[in-house]
Length: 504
Image (cartoon, rainbow, N blue to C red; front, top):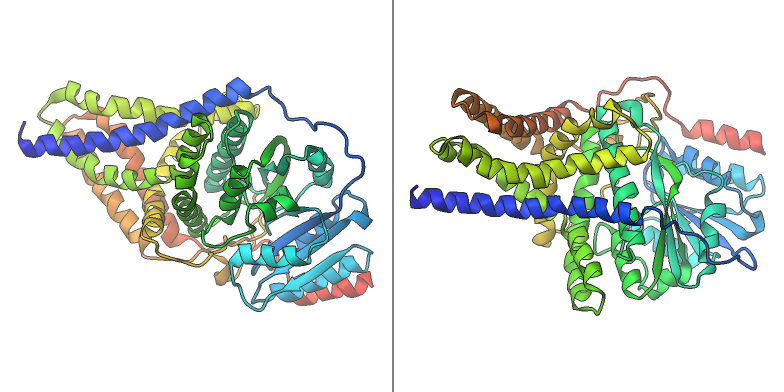
Protein backbone atom coordinates (compact mmCIF):
# COMPACT_ATOMS: atom_id res chain seq x y z
CA UNK A 1 0.00 0.00 0.00
CA UNK A 2 1.47 3.35 -1.03
CA UNK A 3 1.88 6.41 1.17
CA UNK A 4 -0.91 8.18 -0.72
CA UNK A 5 -3.26 5.28 -0.11
CA UNK A 6 -2.39 5.24 3.59
CA UNK A 7 -3.07 8.98 3.92
CA UNK A 8 -6.30 8.67 1.97
CA UNK A 9 -7.56 5.78 4.09
CA UNK A 10 -6.51 7.65 7.23
CA UNK A 11 -8.68 10.60 6.28
CA UNK A 12 -11.49 8.28 5.26
CA UNK A 13 -11.30 6.42 8.56
CA UNK A 14 -11.22 9.69 10.52
CA UNK A 15 -14.40 10.89 8.81
CA UNK A 16 -16.10 7.55 9.43
CA UNK A 17 -15.07 7.57 13.09
CA UNK A 18 -16.50 11.03 13.79
CA UNK A 19 -19.71 10.22 11.90
CA UNK A 20 -19.91 6.96 13.83
CA UNK A 21 -19.58 8.91 17.08
CA UNK A 22 -22.54 11.12 16.18
CA UNK A 23 -24.44 8.11 14.85
CA UNK A 24 -23.88 6.13 18.03
CA UNK A 25 -25.33 9.02 20.00
CA UNK A 26 -28.73 7.89 18.75
CA UNK A 27 -28.21 4.67 20.67
CA UNK A 28 -27.67 6.71 23.81
CA UNK A 29 -30.85 8.69 23.16
CA UNK A 30 -32.84 5.47 22.79
CA UNK A 31 -31.24 4.07 25.96
CA UNK A 32 -32.09 7.19 27.99
CA UNK A 33 -35.61 7.19 26.61
CA UNK A 34 -36.36 3.63 27.67
CA UNK A 35 -34.60 4.11 31.00
CA UNK A 36 -36.76 7.14 31.89
CA UNK A 37 -39.85 6.36 29.82
CA UNK A 38 -42.12 5.89 32.82
CA UNK A 39 -40.87 8.91 34.77
CA UNK A 40 -44.02 10.84 33.93
CA UNK A 41 -44.10 14.58 34.73
CA UNK A 42 -46.90 15.67 37.05
CA UNK A 43 -47.74 19.06 38.59
CA UNK A 44 -46.29 19.46 42.08
CA UNK A 45 -49.49 20.73 43.62
CA UNK A 46 -52.49 22.83 42.70
CA UNK A 47 -52.48 26.48 41.70
CA UNK A 48 -54.27 28.64 44.22
CA UNK A 49 -55.58 30.79 41.37
CA UNK A 50 -55.24 30.68 37.61
CA UNK A 51 -52.68 33.18 36.30
CA UNK A 52 -53.09 35.68 33.47
CA UNK A 53 -51.81 34.28 30.16
CA UNK A 54 -50.78 36.00 26.95
CA UNK A 55 -50.73 33.97 23.73
CA UNK A 56 -48.41 35.41 21.08
CA UNK A 57 -48.89 34.59 17.39
CA UNK A 58 -45.88 35.81 15.38
CA UNK A 59 -46.67 35.83 11.65
CA UNK A 60 -45.06 37.05 8.46
CA UNK A 61 -46.85 36.76 5.10
CA UNK A 62 -49.09 33.85 6.13
CA UNK A 63 -52.27 34.59 4.17
CA UNK A 64 -53.15 30.91 3.71
CA UNK A 65 -53.05 29.91 7.39
CA UNK A 66 -53.52 33.00 9.56
CA UNK A 67 -57.30 32.61 9.91
CA UNK A 68 -56.96 28.94 10.79
CA UNK A 69 -54.40 29.87 13.46
CA UNK A 70 -56.38 32.70 15.04
CA UNK A 71 -59.65 30.79 15.00
CA UNK A 72 -58.09 27.77 16.73
CA UNK A 73 -56.34 29.89 19.37
CA UNK A 74 -59.59 31.70 20.11
CA UNK A 75 -61.18 28.32 20.88
CA UNK A 76 -58.68 27.64 23.68
CA UNK A 77 -60.57 27.08 26.92
CA UNK A 78 -59.46 29.52 29.61
CA UNK A 79 -61.22 32.25 31.60
CA UNK A 80 -61.63 35.13 29.15
CA UNK A 81 -60.76 37.74 31.77
CA UNK A 82 -57.37 36.03 32.23
CA UNK A 83 -56.52 35.52 28.56
CA UNK A 84 -54.89 37.92 26.09
CA UNK A 85 -54.09 37.08 22.46
CA UNK A 86 -51.50 39.06 20.48
CA UNK A 87 -51.33 38.75 16.71
CA UNK A 88 -47.77 39.95 16.01
CA UNK A 89 -47.85 40.68 12.30
CA UNK A 90 -44.75 41.73 10.36
CA UNK A 91 -46.39 40.98 7.02
CA UNK A 92 -45.96 42.97 3.83
CA UNK A 93 -48.72 41.37 1.75
CA UNK A 94 -52.45 40.57 1.91
CA UNK A 95 -51.93 38.86 5.25
CA UNK A 96 -52.24 42.23 6.99
CA UNK A 97 -55.83 42.74 5.89
CA UNK A 98 -56.83 39.14 6.53
CA UNK A 99 -55.31 39.11 10.02
CA UNK A 100 -56.72 42.50 10.97
CA UNK A 101 -60.24 41.51 9.90
CA UNK A 102 -59.98 38.18 11.71
CA UNK A 103 -58.84 39.91 14.91
CA UNK A 104 -61.70 42.39 14.70
CA UNK A 105 -64.21 39.59 14.20
CA UNK A 106 -63.09 37.86 17.40
CA UNK A 107 -62.79 41.13 19.31
CA UNK A 108 -66.44 41.80 18.60
CA UNK A 109 -67.24 38.46 20.19
CA UNK A 110 -65.72 39.69 23.44
CA UNK A 111 -62.21 38.24 23.28
CA UNK A 112 -59.20 40.23 24.46
CA UNK A 113 -57.29 40.00 21.18
CA UNK A 114 -55.02 42.69 19.72
CA UNK A 115 -53.38 43.18 16.35
CA UNK A 116 -49.82 44.54 16.46
CA UNK A 117 -48.13 45.41 13.18
CA UNK A 118 -44.51 46.48 12.88
CA UNK A 119 -43.28 48.56 9.98
CA UNK A 120 -39.96 46.70 9.89
CA UNK A 121 -38.71 43.19 10.67
CA UNK A 122 -35.92 44.21 13.00
CA UNK A 123 -34.88 41.08 14.89
CA UNK A 124 -37.30 39.02 12.77
CA UNK A 125 -39.36 36.61 14.89
CA UNK A 126 -37.33 37.30 18.04
CA UNK A 127 -37.88 41.01 17.53
CA UNK A 128 -41.63 40.55 17.11
CA UNK A 129 -41.86 38.46 20.27
CA UNK A 130 -39.78 40.95 22.26
CA UNK A 131 -41.90 43.83 21.00
CA UNK A 132 -45.09 42.00 21.96
CA UNK A 133 -43.71 41.15 25.37
CA UNK A 134 -43.36 44.86 26.18
CA UNK A 135 -47.12 45.22 25.73
CA UNK A 136 -48.20 41.85 27.13
CA UNK A 137 -50.38 41.65 30.24
CA UNK A 138 -49.78 38.00 31.09
CA UNK A 139 -47.54 36.44 33.73
CA UNK A 140 -47.13 33.52 31.33
CA UNK A 141 -46.60 33.66 27.58
CA UNK A 142 -47.53 30.94 25.09
CA UNK A 143 -46.27 31.03 21.49
CA UNK A 144 -47.75 29.48 18.35
CA UNK A 145 -46.38 29.76 14.84
CA UNK A 146 -48.68 30.39 11.91
CA UNK A 147 -49.03 26.76 10.82
CA UNK A 148 -50.25 25.46 14.20
CA UNK A 149 -53.75 24.48 15.29
CA UNK A 150 -53.61 24.16 19.09
CA UNK A 151 -56.23 22.09 20.86
CA UNK A 152 -58.75 23.82 23.19
CA UNK A 153 -57.24 22.19 26.30
CA UNK A 154 -53.68 23.44 25.71
CA UNK A 155 -53.60 25.84 28.67
CA UNK A 156 -55.54 23.52 30.94
CA UNK A 157 -52.84 20.87 30.47
CA UNK A 158 -49.74 23.07 30.63
CA UNK A 159 -50.41 25.91 33.11
CA UNK A 160 -50.73 23.61 36.20
CA UNK A 161 -47.02 22.70 35.97
CA UNK A 162 -46.09 26.28 36.85
CA UNK A 163 -47.20 25.67 40.42
CA UNK A 164 -43.53 24.73 40.83
CA UNK A 165 -41.70 28.09 40.98
CA UNK A 166 -38.61 26.51 39.39
CA UNK A 167 -40.43 25.61 36.17
CA UNK A 168 -39.76 28.19 33.48
CA UNK A 169 -41.18 26.59 30.32
CA UNK A 170 -43.50 23.79 29.27
CA UNK A 171 -43.23 22.36 25.74
CA UNK A 172 -45.75 20.04 24.07
CA UNK A 173 -45.28 17.68 21.14
CA UNK A 174 -45.94 18.68 17.55
CA UNK A 175 -48.53 16.78 15.56
CA UNK A 176 -48.78 16.76 11.76
CA UNK A 177 -51.83 18.02 9.89
CA UNK A 178 -50.60 16.85 6.49
CA UNK A 179 -48.54 13.74 7.24
CA UNK A 180 -50.34 11.85 4.44
CA UNK A 181 -49.74 14.53 1.80
CA UNK A 182 -46.66 12.91 0.23
CA UNK A 183 -43.66 10.73 0.96
CA UNK A 184 -41.74 13.91 1.81
CA UNK A 185 -44.25 14.95 4.49
CA UNK A 186 -44.29 11.37 5.80
CA UNK A 187 -40.52 11.51 6.19
CA UNK A 188 -40.58 14.92 7.88
CA UNK A 189 -43.22 13.69 10.31
CA UNK A 190 -41.08 10.69 11.25
CA UNK A 191 -38.01 12.92 11.69
CA UNK A 192 -39.96 15.24 13.99
CA UNK A 193 -41.52 12.37 15.91
CA UNK A 194 -38.05 11.03 16.61
CA UNK A 195 -36.92 14.43 17.85
CA UNK A 196 -39.90 14.92 20.14
CA UNK A 197 -40.79 11.42 21.33
CA UNK A 198 -37.28 10.03 21.83
CA UNK A 199 -34.85 12.96 22.09
CA UNK A 200 -36.95 15.45 24.04
CA UNK A 201 -38.22 12.80 26.46
CA UNK A 202 -34.73 11.36 26.94
CA UNK A 203 -33.09 14.72 27.58
CA UNK A 204 -35.81 16.15 29.78
CA UNK A 205 -36.36 13.13 32.02
CA UNK A 206 -32.64 12.33 32.39
CA UNK A 207 -31.96 15.83 33.73
CA UNK A 208 -30.23 17.18 30.61
CA UNK A 209 -31.02 20.41 28.80
CA UNK A 210 -33.64 20.37 26.08
CA UNK A 211 -35.11 23.21 24.10
CA UNK A 212 -38.28 25.14 23.45
CA UNK A 213 -39.07 24.55 19.77
CA UNK A 214 -40.16 28.08 18.96
CA UNK A 215 -43.85 27.23 19.14
CA UNK A 216 -46.41 25.07 21.00
CA UNK A 217 -44.93 25.95 24.36
CA UNK A 218 -45.57 28.32 27.24
CA UNK A 219 -43.06 30.39 29.21
CA UNK A 220 -43.00 31.99 32.61
CA UNK A 221 -42.47 35.62 31.74
CA UNK A 222 -39.91 36.07 34.51
CA UNK A 223 -37.85 33.26 32.99
CA UNK A 224 -37.58 35.04 29.65
CA UNK A 225 -36.52 38.26 31.34
CA UNK A 226 -34.10 36.57 33.74
CA UNK A 227 -32.38 34.77 30.85
CA UNK A 228 -31.79 38.01 28.96
CA UNK A 229 -34.90 38.14 26.78
CA UNK A 230 -35.35 37.23 23.15
CA UNK A 231 -32.13 37.82 21.22
CA UNK A 232 -31.69 37.75 17.45
CA UNK A 233 -27.97 37.13 16.99
CA UNK A 234 -28.75 33.54 15.96
CA UNK A 235 -31.38 32.10 13.60
CA UNK A 236 -32.68 29.82 16.36
CA UNK A 237 -33.77 32.30 18.99
CA UNK A 238 -35.76 29.52 20.71
CA UNK A 239 -32.74 27.25 21.16
CA UNK A 240 -30.61 30.18 22.32
CA UNK A 241 -33.10 31.36 24.95
CA UNK A 242 -33.71 27.78 26.13
CA UNK A 243 -30.07 27.18 26.94
CA UNK A 244 -29.60 30.59 28.53
CA UNK A 245 -32.62 29.99 30.76
CA UNK A 246 -31.47 26.53 31.85
CA UNK A 247 -27.99 27.88 32.54
CA UNK A 248 -29.73 30.24 34.96
CA UNK A 249 -31.19 27.24 36.78
CA UNK A 250 -34.72 27.23 35.36
CA UNK A 251 -36.33 23.83 34.83
CA UNK A 252 -38.26 22.82 31.71
CA UNK A 253 -41.05 20.27 31.30
CA UNK A 254 -41.87 18.27 28.17
CA UNK A 255 -45.35 16.78 27.72
CA UNK A 256 -45.29 14.22 24.88
CA UNK A 257 -48.88 13.21 25.54
CA UNK A 258 -50.11 16.73 24.74
CA UNK A 259 -50.08 17.22 20.97
CA UNK A 260 -50.37 20.47 19.04
CA UNK A 261 -51.00 19.77 15.31
CA UNK A 262 -49.06 21.70 12.69
CA UNK A 263 -48.32 21.72 8.98
CA UNK A 264 -45.02 20.42 7.65
CA UNK A 265 -43.63 21.88 4.38
CA UNK A 266 -44.98 20.27 1.22
CA UNK A 267 -42.39 21.93 -1.01
CA UNK A 268 -38.81 20.57 -1.13
CA UNK A 269 -37.28 24.04 -1.35
CA UNK A 270 -39.32 25.19 1.64
CA UNK A 271 -38.18 22.12 3.57
CA UNK A 272 -34.55 22.81 2.66
CA UNK A 273 -34.92 26.45 3.71
CA UNK A 274 -36.26 25.34 7.09
CA UNK A 275 -33.46 22.81 7.52
CA UNK A 276 -30.87 25.42 6.52
CA UNK A 277 -32.14 27.82 9.18
CA UNK A 278 -32.21 25.16 11.89
CA UNK A 279 -28.75 23.85 11.02
CA UNK A 280 -27.17 27.28 10.83
CA UNK A 281 -28.90 28.50 13.98
CA UNK A 282 -27.81 25.50 16.03
CA UNK A 283 -24.15 26.05 15.15
CA UNK A 284 -24.49 29.78 15.87
CA UNK A 285 -25.93 28.88 19.27
CA UNK A 286 -23.13 26.38 19.87
CA UNK A 287 -20.50 29.04 19.16
CA UNK A 288 -22.30 31.47 21.42
CA UNK A 289 -23.08 29.29 24.42
CA UNK A 290 -21.08 26.06 24.34
CA UNK A 291 -17.90 27.60 25.85
CA UNK A 292 -19.96 28.86 28.79
CA UNK A 293 -21.66 25.48 29.20
CA UNK A 294 -18.38 23.55 29.15
CA UNK A 295 -16.77 25.92 31.67
CA UNK A 296 -19.75 25.76 34.04
CA UNK A 297 -20.09 23.45 37.06
CA UNK A 298 -22.88 21.49 35.41
CA UNK A 299 -22.66 17.67 35.64
CA UNK A 300 -20.58 15.97 32.95
CA UNK A 301 -23.65 14.18 31.55
CA UNK A 302 -25.39 17.53 30.97
CA UNK A 303 -22.32 19.02 29.29
CA UNK A 304 -21.87 15.96 27.08
CA UNK A 305 -25.47 15.99 25.93
CA UNK A 306 -25.36 19.75 25.30
CA UNK A 307 -22.28 19.25 23.13
CA UNK A 308 -23.92 16.57 20.98
CA UNK A 309 -27.20 18.47 20.82
CA UNK A 310 -25.69 21.78 19.71
CA UNK A 311 -23.02 20.41 17.36
CA UNK A 312 -24.98 17.57 15.78
CA UNK A 313 -25.30 19.40 12.46
CA UNK A 314 -21.51 19.40 12.07
CA UNK A 315 -22.02 15.85 10.85
CA UNK A 316 -23.40 17.24 7.57
CA UNK A 317 -20.02 18.71 6.70
CA UNK A 318 -18.45 15.33 7.24
CA UNK A 319 -21.22 13.66 5.25
CA UNK A 320 -20.35 15.80 2.22
CA UNK A 321 -16.68 14.91 2.64
CA UNK A 322 -17.61 11.24 2.95
CA UNK A 323 -19.70 11.56 -0.22
CA UNK A 324 -16.65 12.79 -2.09
CA UNK A 325 -14.35 10.12 -0.64
CA UNK A 326 -16.55 7.02 -0.74
CA UNK A 327 -16.41 6.32 -4.51
CA UNK A 328 -12.66 7.00 -4.54
CA UNK A 329 -12.18 4.62 -1.63
CA UNK A 330 -13.53 1.78 -3.73
CA UNK A 331 -10.65 2.20 -6.17
CA UNK A 332 -8.23 1.83 -3.25
CA UNK A 333 -10.15 -1.07 -1.70
CA UNK A 334 -10.49 -2.85 -5.03
CA UNK A 335 -6.98 -4.21 -4.52
CA UNK A 336 -7.67 -5.51 -1.01
CA UNK A 337 -10.59 -7.85 -1.58
CA UNK A 338 -13.79 -8.46 0.37
CA UNK A 339 -12.29 -8.37 3.86
CA UNK A 340 -10.72 -4.97 3.30
CA UNK A 341 -14.07 -3.68 2.12
CA UNK A 342 -15.94 -5.07 5.10
CA UNK A 343 -13.30 -3.69 7.47
CA UNK A 344 -14.18 -0.18 6.29
CA UNK A 345 -17.92 -0.48 5.64
CA UNK A 346 -19.15 -2.63 8.51
CA UNK A 347 -18.28 -0.24 11.38
CA UNK A 348 -19.98 2.59 9.53
CA UNK A 349 -23.07 0.47 9.00
CA UNK A 350 -23.32 -0.64 12.62
CA UNK A 351 -22.75 2.77 14.21
CA UNK A 352 -24.42 5.09 11.71
CA UNK A 353 -26.86 3.37 9.38
CA UNK A 354 -28.11 0.82 11.90
CA UNK A 355 -28.49 3.51 14.57
CA UNK A 356 -30.83 5.48 12.32
CA UNK A 357 -32.94 2.38 11.72
CA UNK A 358 -33.16 1.46 15.39
CA UNK A 359 -33.90 5.04 16.42
CA UNK A 360 -36.82 5.55 14.05
CA UNK A 361 -38.21 2.04 14.45
CA UNK A 362 -38.33 2.78 18.19
CA UNK A 363 -40.10 6.05 17.44
CA UNK A 364 -42.74 4.31 15.33
CA UNK A 365 -43.15 1.58 17.93
CA UNK A 366 -43.83 4.12 20.67
CA UNK A 367 -46.66 5.49 18.55
CA UNK A 368 -48.28 2.09 18.29
CA UNK A 369 -47.34 1.61 14.62
CA UNK A 370 -46.85 -2.06 13.85
CA UNK A 371 -45.12 -4.37 11.41
CA UNK A 372 -44.33 -3.20 7.91
CA UNK A 373 -45.59 0.33 8.63
CA UNK A 374 -42.66 0.85 11.01
CA UNK A 375 -39.93 0.12 8.52
CA UNK A 376 -41.22 0.85 5.03
CA UNK A 377 -40.03 4.48 5.05
CA UNK A 378 -36.57 3.76 6.54
CA UNK A 379 -34.63 3.57 3.24
CA UNK A 380 -36.19 6.82 2.13
CA UNK A 381 -35.44 8.46 5.49
CA UNK A 382 -31.77 7.56 5.20
CA UNK A 383 -31.57 8.71 1.57
CA UNK A 384 -33.33 11.98 2.35
CA UNK A 385 -30.96 12.69 5.23
CA UNK A 386 -28.01 12.12 2.91
CA UNK A 387 -29.57 14.22 0.14
CA UNK A 388 -29.91 17.16 2.54
CA UNK A 389 -26.21 17.03 3.42
CA UNK A 390 -25.07 19.64 0.88
CA UNK A 391 -27.83 22.09 1.82
CA UNK A 392 -27.17 21.74 5.55
CA UNK A 393 -23.38 21.66 5.20
CA UNK A 394 -23.63 25.04 3.50
CA UNK A 395 -25.60 26.30 6.50
CA UNK A 396 -22.97 24.99 8.92
CA UNK A 397 -20.16 26.63 6.94
CA UNK A 398 -22.01 29.95 6.94
CA UNK A 399 -22.34 29.76 10.72
CA UNK A 400 -18.68 28.83 11.22
CA UNK A 401 -17.57 31.69 8.95
CA UNK A 402 -19.90 34.19 10.67
CA UNK A 403 -21.81 34.82 7.46
CA UNK A 404 -25.02 36.57 8.46
CA UNK A 405 -28.36 35.98 6.78
CA UNK A 406 -31.95 37.00 7.33
CA UNK A 407 -34.62 34.87 8.98
CA UNK A 408 -36.19 33.03 6.02
CA UNK A 409 -39.68 31.93 7.01
CA UNK A 410 -40.91 28.49 6.06
CA UNK A 411 -43.73 29.01 3.52
CA UNK A 412 -47.12 27.61 4.56
CA UNK A 413 -49.82 26.51 2.12
CA UNK A 414 -52.66 25.59 4.46
CA UNK A 415 -52.54 21.93 3.42
CA UNK A 416 -54.24 19.32 5.58
CA UNK A 417 -54.28 15.60 4.85
CA UNK A 418 -53.84 15.25 1.09
CA UNK A 419 -55.56 18.52 0.23
CA UNK A 420 -53.56 20.71 -2.16
CA UNK A 421 -53.93 24.46 -2.49
CA UNK A 422 -52.58 26.55 -5.32
CA UNK A 423 -50.39 29.25 -3.83
CA UNK A 424 -48.54 32.30 -5.03
CA UNK A 425 -44.97 31.71 -6.17
CA UNK A 426 -43.70 33.93 -3.36
CA UNK A 427 -45.14 31.37 -0.91
CA UNK A 428 -42.97 28.58 -2.29
CA UNK A 429 -39.40 27.93 -1.23
CA UNK A 430 -36.79 29.92 -3.11
CA UNK A 431 -34.91 28.09 -5.85
CA UNK A 432 -31.11 28.22 -5.88
CA UNK A 433 -28.23 26.62 -7.78
CA UNK A 434 -27.83 24.03 -5.02
CA UNK A 435 -29.85 21.36 -6.92
CA UNK A 436 -27.22 21.37 -9.66
CA UNK A 437 -24.57 20.45 -7.09
CA UNK A 438 -26.83 17.73 -5.69
CA UNK A 439 -27.43 16.31 -9.17
CA UNK A 440 -23.68 16.37 -9.83
CA UNK A 441 -23.21 14.22 -6.72
CA UNK A 442 -25.99 11.91 -7.94
CA UNK A 443 -24.16 11.49 -11.25
CA UNK A 444 -20.91 10.88 -9.36
CA UNK A 445 -22.53 8.05 -7.40
CA UNK A 446 -24.10 6.64 -10.55
CA UNK A 447 -20.59 6.16 -11.91
CA UNK A 448 -19.52 4.68 -8.59
CA UNK A 449 -22.43 2.23 -8.71
CA UNK A 450 -21.40 1.05 -12.18
CA UNK A 451 -17.81 0.58 -10.99
CA UNK A 452 -18.88 -1.34 -7.86
CA UNK A 453 -21.01 -3.74 -9.86
CA UNK A 454 -18.39 -4.18 -12.54
CA UNK A 455 -15.66 -4.80 -9.95
CA UNK A 456 -18.01 -7.02 -7.89
CA UNK A 457 -17.64 -4.89 -4.75
CA UNK A 458 -21.18 -5.80 -3.79
CA UNK A 459 -20.85 -4.87 -0.12
CA UNK A 460 -20.60 -1.19 -1.15
CA UNK A 461 -23.65 -1.24 -3.44
CA UNK A 462 -26.33 -0.62 -0.73
CA UNK A 463 -24.46 2.44 0.55
CA UNK A 464 -23.87 3.81 -2.95
CA UNK A 465 -27.55 3.41 -3.83
CA UNK A 466 -28.59 5.29 -0.67
CA UNK A 467 -26.31 8.21 -1.55
CA UNK A 468 -27.24 8.19 -5.23
CA UNK A 469 -30.99 8.08 -4.53
CA UNK A 470 -30.78 10.76 -1.85
CA UNK A 471 -28.94 13.33 -3.96
CA UNK A 472 -31.05 12.50 -7.02
CA UNK A 473 -34.38 12.87 -5.19
CA UNK A 474 -33.48 16.10 -3.42
CA UNK A 475 -31.94 17.64 -6.55
CA UNK A 476 -34.77 16.73 -8.92
CA UNK A 477 -37.48 17.64 -6.41
CA UNK A 478 -35.88 21.05 -5.83
CA UNK A 479 -35.95 21.79 -9.56
CA UNK A 480 -39.49 20.55 -10.20
CA UNK A 481 -41.28 21.76 -7.06
CA UNK A 482 -43.93 24.46 -7.04
CA UNK A 483 -46.53 22.94 -9.33
CA UNK A 484 -49.33 22.49 -6.81
CA UNK A 485 -52.81 21.52 -7.96
CA UNK A 486 -55.84 23.60 -7.11
CA UNK A 487 -58.46 22.11 -4.85
CA UNK A 488 -59.35 25.07 -2.67
CA UNK A 489 -59.24 28.83 -3.29
CA UNK A 490 -56.67 30.95 -1.53
CA UNK A 491 -58.14 33.24 1.13
CA UNK A 492 -58.71 36.86 0.31
CA UNK A 493 -58.97 40.09 2.22
CA UNK A 494 -62.47 40.59 0.90
CA UNK A 495 -63.60 37.22 2.30
CA UNK A 496 -62.24 38.04 5.74
CA UNK A 497 -63.78 41.50 5.79
CA UNK A 498 -67.18 40.06 4.85
CA UNK A 499 -66.87 37.63 7.74
CA UNK A 500 -66.08 40.50 10.09
CA UNK A 501 -69.14 42.43 8.88
CA UNK A 502 -71.37 39.39 9.38
CA UNK A 503 -69.97 38.93 12.89
CA UNK A 504 -70.85 42.54 13.63
